[in-house]
Every structure is written in structure tokens, then in C-alpha cells.
Image (cartoon, protein in one colour):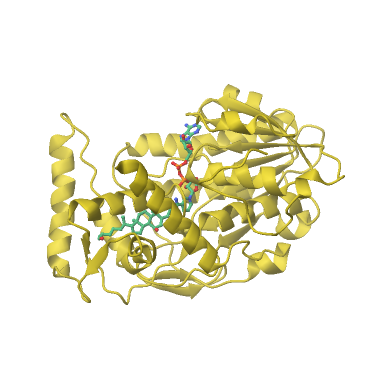
Length: 385
Ligand SMILES: NC(=O)c1ccc[n+]([C@@H]2O[C@H](COP(=O)([O-])OP(=O)(O)OC[C@H]3O[C@@H](n4cnc5c(N)ncnc54)[C@H](O)[C@@H]3O)[C@@H](O)[C@H]2O)c1
Ligand SMILES: C[C@@H](CO)CCC[C@@H](C)[C@H]1CC[C@H]2[C@@H]3[C@H](O)C=C4C[C@@H](O)CC[C@]4(C)[C@H]3CC[C@]12C
């Protein structure tokens, strides 16, 4: 496989597995395979799934980096398509053994309409399920989100929770609403008979906030810090903890689930798994500083510099400005009432369900995840000059 300096190769685990004598017989489809997470899943599959014969990458926008993958031993098929178009999805799914459905609209900033978010995240997922049923694909892994649980509209903390922790999962924002509906569709589809009469096996992974190479919001914070003379200003109390997970480990969990679904269908079918690793629990801002600090940024203040009521006011003002400016331009700042509530609510997971059910252990240690992410931010810095 072609090497890639941004992503590198995972350490030692299964190095060279793709060269082993195991039969290459499986066809995988990754929807959203050119996105932040999707690209890592694609690369991880090529490195860690020895049974892969063909890898189909389905996305609305195909990346130029796909070309370099086509020279390896696995057949890489790039498919430009839209998950909202049932016939395009069905054509891509036909003949695949496993579908990893990561495509989605991740928008908590008001860039897209609620209708479009619903269409892509819910109808798109429905199309993927129906395509599996109609064409006989039996294994479906869905990238859900921690947001199907919370933080909820009341801003109640979720502290070191697991998949069984009681929590009032009530949402109003289009993104978590769409993810929750889509996850429900996926779980309900478990056991449906696919073409040929065998049952569909599905499960959903719920990553917490993902970070790592390619993370657009980290890039945005970095550039904001540069614009502010190398400083970021603390807005959130350091005591508000967030669960974060390295993208390489999220990708690894997808690969493992996809591999194990067939052998452990009775145990894993219809299940949800939080997607976690050993990244430390910190506030959103303090966690970002683990990477932005070594790249020369400083977080000013040990306490929030603005009172909370003022942040609430500014967030509301941003909503008004977004609405007023909409006919002229897209104004979508990081701060809005929803992102403020998220950043201000403790949400951390602590679970070993994935380890118990399919032997998941993070592939990348916290130190390695941190180093890789810092190296990537430094490369962003280099390319910006
Ligand atoms: N980023 C996070 O912190 C996070 C956390 C939890 C869950 N997730 C979930 O992980 C998945 C991937 O998120 P990401 O952060 O990589 O987002 P991303 O925007 O980088 O990737 C999404 C990909 O889906 C593609 N896509 C969007 N609409 C499409 C359509 N109509 N048809 C086909 N492809 C389409 C995009 O082109 C993009 O390549 C999403 O389902 C998201 O809900 C993300
Ligand atoms: C008030 C600002 C001062 O610095 C900080 C704003 C931070 C927010 C932009 C982010 C805080 C929490 C983030 C979300 C969280 O990590 C989990 C997510 C789940 C996932 O499915 C999509 C991304 C996200 C919603 C993520 C988005 C950015 C935050 C709201």
C-alpha cells in the first residue's frame, strides 16, 4: 500500500498482515470514505484487514488522495454518489459483504438546513439499510455519535457513563435528532431478512468528540489562535470534562466490529458501543491545548474571561446575525447556543463493552495519538505559510 506521511502506519499491530497468506475474499463499502473519519477507516482497512479483496469508497466528494491507494494489492473503487439517492446507494452496495456507513452531515453551526441534515443522515441511512436488504449484504456498521445520548437540552452532566447509564436523552437540535433517528433505524433493522433469506446484522458505534489528523474544528481553533496573536481566551470552566477519542482508534474500532460481526452476530447484532480510548478527560479547550500548546498557542486565563451570561448573549446574537445575514452570506461562527451548551456540559464515557464484546483495545496510546495530532497541526502551520 502506498504510504502517507500525514497518517503514517499504525505501530506494530498486524503489521504486514495484508501480505499474509490469508485469502483475500471480502468486499467492503465505506460510505463517507473521503471524510475526516472515513479516510482513516479506509486507510485502516487497507492496513489491517487481510481478507479484503475490494474496497469501495462512496462519497459525495471524492478526494485526490484516493489515486495513490489504487496501486496496492486491494482493488480500490471510488464511487462518487449521494446517500440520499437510493439507486446510487443500491448500486454501490450490491455485492458488498460489509457496509461501514460513516457518511453524514456533521453540522452544529447552522450551515445547512434542518431538512437537509435529516435527508442526509436519516433518509441516507434508510437507503443504506434498504440497499443491504435488497442486495443481500448482511453486515452493517453505523457511525452514530455520543450525541444520540447527550448532552441533552437540560445540560445535565453525563459523568463516566456507559451504554447502560440512565440519562434523559432529549434533543431539539437537528444534528443529534437526526443521529438518534438514524441509529434507531439501524438497530431496528438488525435481524431483517436480506436477499437470500439470511438475517441482517447491524450495530452502531458512538464516538465521543473525535480529534486527530484532518480535524477541521481543530484547524479552525488553530487559525483563530494565530489571528489573535498566538492566544486563545478561556471561555469554559476547566472543570467541565469532555470525552474525546483519537480518530485512529475510532477507525480501528470500526475495522474490528466489521470483522467480528459475522462471528459474534448473536452477541453484537443490534448493539451500540461507545467509541473511546485512553485520551484524558479534560475541558474542550484544555484538551485542544494538548496539541495547540506545542504548536505555539497559549490559553489565556485560568477561569473563563467572560461571564457566562455574556457568552449566552453573544451566542444568541450570533443566531440573530446568522439569520439576518443569510440572504447575503453564510455566517456560521463556532459560538452559538447549542455549541456553548455542549462545551459547558460534562460528557465523558467510561466503558469496557467494546472490549468485552469484540476484544477492542485502542491501537494508539494517548502519547502516540497526541504526537500524531501535534505533527499534523505543525504540518497545517507549515502549509499555511
Ligand atoms: N467528528 C466527530 O467528532 C464525530 C463524532 C461522533 C460521530 N461522528 C460521525 O462520524 C461520521 C463522520 O463524521 P466526520 O467528522 O468524518 O465528518 P466529515 O464531514 O468529515 O465526513 C462526512 C463525509 O460524508 C460525506 N457526505 C456528506 N453528505 C453525503 C451524501 N449526501 N452522500 C454521500 N456522502 C456524503 C462527506 O462528503 C464527507 O466526506 C458522521 O456520521 C458523524 O455523525 C463524528
Ligand atoms: C464556546 C467556545 C469557546 O472556545 C467553544 C466551542 C466549542 C464547540 C465548537 C465544541 C464543543 C463540543 C464539540 C462537539 C463535541 O465534541 C461532540 C460532537 C459530536 C459529533 O457527533 C460531531 C461534532 C461534535 C458536535 C463537536 C462539535 C464542536 C463542539 C460543539
